[in-house]
Length: 184
Image (tube, rainbow, N blue to C red; front, side, top):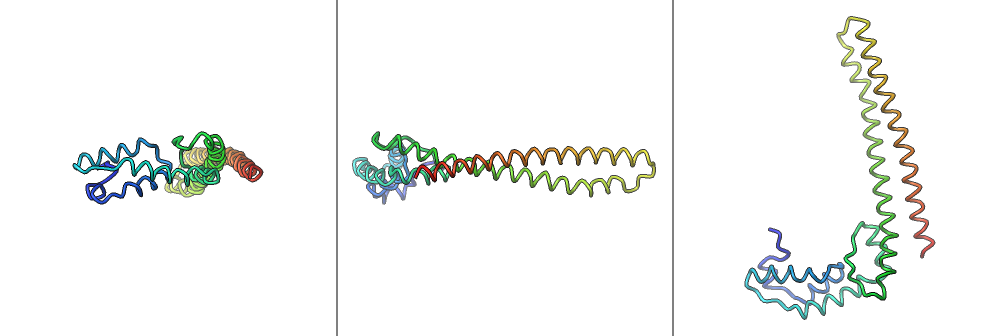
């Protein structure tokens, strides 16, 4: 179930092309070992030398510093596969893209929480009407109304705090985007 290659894929594998694919996706060299083991279980031989040649070719595409930012912006991780000559710049650009990705994710998370709290607040009126329906005693009605007023006040306070958090998250996003703009 979790093998990286099926028997059929092992039978028809172009190891050079697989190396190019894995290199262009920034996969670590250890990934080929998983491929080799999957094919060995099926009794099929592999060509690690052709794979390594292809992987080197794929890494040339992957390890371009201009590629790093978009990988970070997509939330991708880096397995430290690039040559030392470009590694530091690659990591820096990846981190810049990742900062934007993380800030966007945080903005979305807070927006979703605000929407949920606002929906909950809108439903309190219906919930209150349902609970009040059929109550005859005035002191019971006042108690329920107080409970719902407190609940609405608490929800409004939570929404206000989330609004402040959202402003801070948007500020972080803006700063990350601005830092990238000036880095170019």
